[in-house]
Length: 282
Image (cartoon, rainbow, N blue to C red; front, side, top):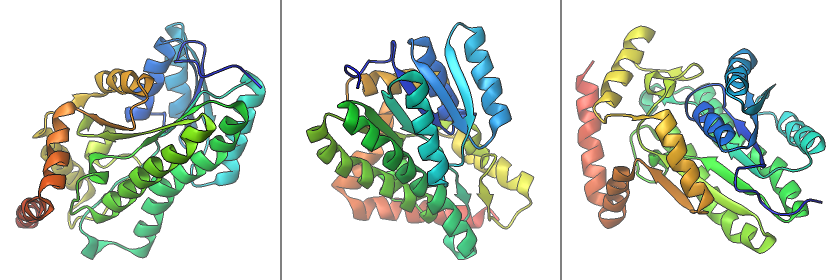
């Protein structure tokens, strides 16, 4: 069908959740490296603004509306991209939301929504792109999880879905190597994006007014000195080019992963103490 994976320059990439945050930063970095980028997001207007700014800087970018929970729509996006551009080198399954609050305050709708977006959206992206990449004989699937997918936390909904993304990615990588397809999973630490305040589509379940919830989330995350999203994106793409299986950035976040593996009991103790402080903040 085509030749081989192009390491960004001359390649074609789809990025979901590309209208803001990590998705937008990765799209910008891909375009700077010579990739044609399809910015896919449920918020088409914001995606169009991001794509236009990339084009203004000489990049090649196109915006498409897609709800990652809709497999038919995701599959159509992949098919249209390949039909128009002749190939698909990368798909970044990045779209995600957060549920802010403890499990005691969850609703079944909150559970179903976060599973549908964070895990189901990745499944849909994989299922749509993987067969295409097998036929090509090349391609790279990059799924966005989180440090919450490597280190257990009290944010059970978010953590559960991100653990699922890590497991999916690691398992698929084993199979995909035989087919000539690469698979990586990104596990960001704290990165300066809208999700630090709950995100546009996040579900806020703390017993506080919405503005107070967002303020509390932002203040808590600022303690970790969030990395600028553009710096994060460049570091991610460097690791993607090296075909790393698990990409943990900022690098110091690996300390928490190491501690989780070395002493899960101690990690759980620290997390419980943090949760107790959280409860006292109300």
